[in-house]
Image (tube, rainbow, N blue to C red; front, side):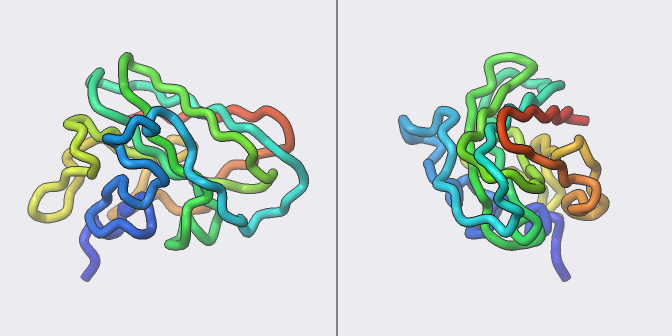
Length: 165
């Protein structure tokens, strides 16, 4: 039986929803909003794109936001396209993803309030720290489904908003 902790894994190589699968360690100097290397996504590549993601309704102004950007295969359990960490200094955070192929993407993120590099959970695997998905989609006993979390990135500049519930 899968527990919520394993279902909500934000990055593929994580064993307990940690930041380790992202390209930078949350404690390294490079951790400030630098994307992970981009792998070859299984999306329709029609042009270079940038994506500005604004995260709203951050209740605690400390710690880091850890976000992972996925294509469909990655969202359903494969590798992330890009990962990013950003310090929380207010009730909104902006993440900038660059050099993306145009296509459909989904985002999984969490607020690492205590800065320990992982999403804390209770003994039953229920998250103790805030988490969210693209389109501010809600998950039921796991991450939001691809069909409600996916959004389109076109060549050029794009923006997306995620609100913590």
